[in-house]
Length: 260
Image 1 (cartoon, rainbow, N blue to C red):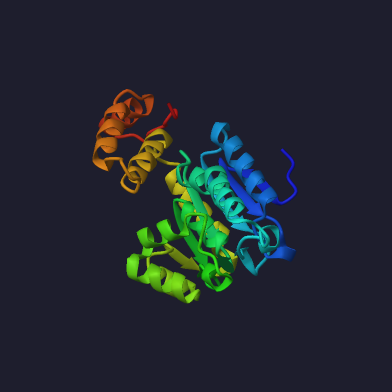
Image 2 (cartoon, rainbow, N blue to C red):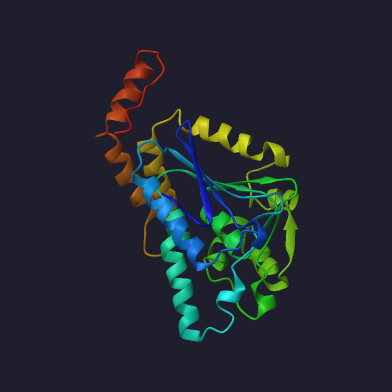
């Protein structure tokens, strides 16, 4: 599919989605959010895709925030609809995506950009990365899950400070805060993410999808994460991947998972 604001590349069963609005520092507008939704929706059913890496074009920014010019004159009702629509189409969709999603954060990840990175299953940052949720400096609050996901990742106190000061933290501080898993040199960022994706793909993608569901359940209101884990664990016994994985282990050979 052809897009105006994103690029796609599939290599070795890894889909790299690049947000490509460098003149706008890859800021998220409504069209880009819709295109990202379509790209992820297509990747969900594409058997050639096992892992998704999301990144930004250029050296300056992953995503420098939302495109403020689009909503500067919105009413309260329109603002609420903007947040609800964005969360449903992209941020919650990514967070609950059944295939692993890695955010390769290069440069600025601010506002909606950091919220997108936090929706991914984990994050790798380049040394020049800077992250923050500066929305209160505009008289608004994070609206794409930032007030929920940031405390889950860095703790309530640090999240309160980051959001209330509207300040940025650098890559090493983000690593200290557990906001990112790794910090690497910028030129190594995508290669490093691809290497991790390669390690992931050696395992059962069916089991990984079940694990994503179980882990996420612990952070959803009204859901018992332990119960979800038990159910997904039980379902695993009915998969071809389980039969292959156990047979390979017992026969001391490398598993060749069918993905079913």
